[in-house]
Image 1 (cartoon, helix red, strand yellow):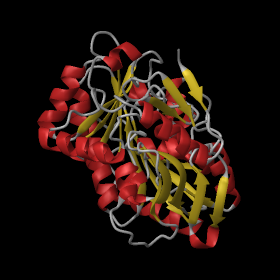
Image 2: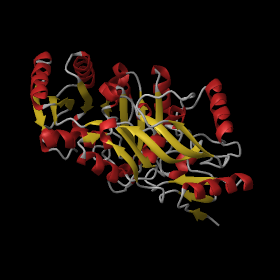
Image 3: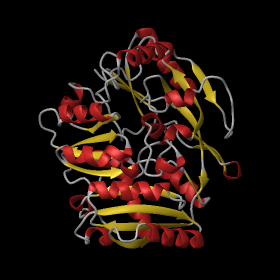
Length: 403
C-alpha cells in the first residue's frame, strides 16, 4: 500500500528520510507534482510530499538575493519579484503546462531540480548559474548546507551545480537561495517572416554576434507560428524568426533599429512591442501553446546552434528552435518508441543531448528518458549518488534504470 508522508518542518523532513534510509524504503519526492511526468517513473512505494515547506524566507532587493523554502510556488515568487521590478534572469520554464496543470503551480525547488532554463539562457546563463546556495536533507537523513546567501562566495565544492538537475536523487531541497536581477522596463521583438531553417540560423547567429545585446532568438516554422496566440505571429501564414531586445525604452528603440538595419533585405521584418513581445516569449518559454498535438511525445534536444535547423528538418514531427538554434523542441507520435532511435542517432552524430520531456508512463519506464551516459561518466554519477544516498531511497530510477 502506498503511503504519503508530508513533513511540516525541516526537522520532520530529516526524520522521514532517516527512517526511509534505515528501513531501505524508497521515496518518491514531490513538491506540487507538476513535473511528475518528467523523467522515468520512480520505483517507490512511499511518496514524500514536501509541499508544506513553502514561503519566502528572505527577499533582499538591494542585495539581489532571494531565499525561499523549496516548495514555494513560482506564482508567489514571481508576484513578489514583479512588485520589486526584479526577475529570475534565467527565465524558468513553466513546464507544468505541458503536463496539463495550471500556470504558476510549480515550485522553485522543482525548477532547480530539473534545471529548467528559458530563452534568456543564451544571455543570462543557465539555472545552475543562479543557484547561490541551499539547505537539504541527504539520503542518509542528514541536514546540510551548501553555497551561501551572497552573489560571490567560495565554500569548497560547488554542490549547487551538482544538485541543479539532479531531480531529487541526491537530496531533498528544503531551502534555496537564488540570484535575482532588475527586470527590464521595456521589451521588443524584431520579427523576420518567411525564412527557412538555414536562413533563420544565419540571421540568429548574426544578431547574437552583433552589439545589440539580443536576449532571445527563436525560429518558429509556419505550422508552429500559426498556433501562436499572438495575432501578429499567427496571422502571418509563414515562418517567424523572433529576436528579443530588452532594456530602457531609448536603448531598446535604438538597438532594434540597428538590428533591423543589420538584417535588412533578408526578409520582411516588423517589431512586436511591449506586452505582445512578453507574451510571445512566454509561449516560446513554456512550449505548450506552440506544439500541435496535446497527446504527442515531446523531446527537448540540445545541440550546437549551427546544427539545430538541419537536425530538426531530418526528424519526424513538428519542431521549433530556441537559443539561436541550440535548443530543439520536437513533438512526435507517442506510438512505439516516440522516434527515439532517430532522435538518438541524430544527436549522436552531431553531439549534444536529448531528453524525452513528455511521454506516457509505460514508454518512459521502458527506455532511456535522458541522454545515455558513456561508461566513465556513468561510473562517476554512481559514485556521486553513493556519496549522498547510499541506500538508494531518493527518487530511485528517476534518472536512469537501476540508480
